[in-house]
Image 1 (spheres, rainbow, N blue to C red):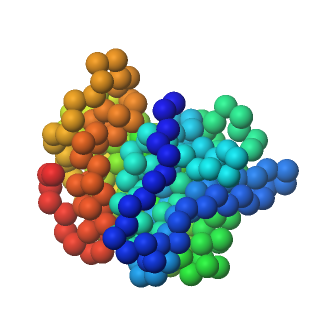
Image 2: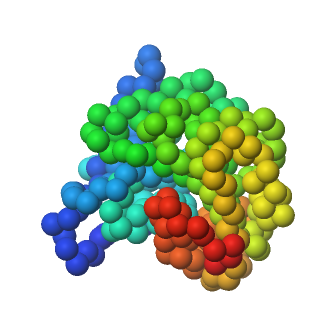
Length: 259
C-alpha cells in the first residue's frame, strides 16, 4: 500500500507537539501500538480513529519514521490536529499477524485493548474522547462505544460504515450521541447508502443521532477496488469538508443533511 510521509505545514508551529508512536502492553504477551498526534495547546479533546479492512491502512513506523496510510481517517488526521484536537490511529495488536477480523472487532480482547488506550489518554487529560470508525472500523467503534463509560467517551462517528454487522442489537447499547456520514455513491457492496441511512433507527439509546449524505468528490483511479480508501467509500476529494462537518457536530452544531 502506498504511504504518505507525514509532513505538516503550520502557520503557527509552536502550537503543535508532533506525532509519536506509543506502544502499550494491553494483554499478557500482547502489545498494541498507536499513533498519537496533538496540538501542544488548545486541545479540545481526542478523536480515537478506527480504520477499516484488516487495519493496515492506519500508519507504518520504521527506523524512527512515521508514514500515514491512505485510509480516509489517516488522510484527515492532520486537519483534526490543525483544528485543536488530538488524534489517535490504532495499529494492529501483536497477536494478530493477519490483521483484524469482524469476530475480533467484537471481542473482549479488542475491548480490553481499546480500554487501555482510553486509560492512557485519560491520564494525560486528553479527554473528552470521540470514537470514529470508517468502513469495518465502524464495527470496532460501535462495539467500544457500547461498553465504555460515556463520562469520558462522549460520542460515536461512523463514516462509510459497513452496514450488515450494525443491523443487530449492538447499536441499541450505545448511549453516546452518534453521527453517521456516508457517500451517496459509495461503491462498496457491504456499505450501500440506503442501508447506511437506515442505521439511524438502530441507535435507540443514543440521545442524539444525525446522518449526513455526501455527494461529489474526485473520480477514483480506473482500477480502484470498490471498498478501497481512494474511492467515494473513503470520501475521495471531500476529505476536508467531511472532517469539518464531523468537528462541527462534535462541537454541538446540527449538521446539514447533505454535503
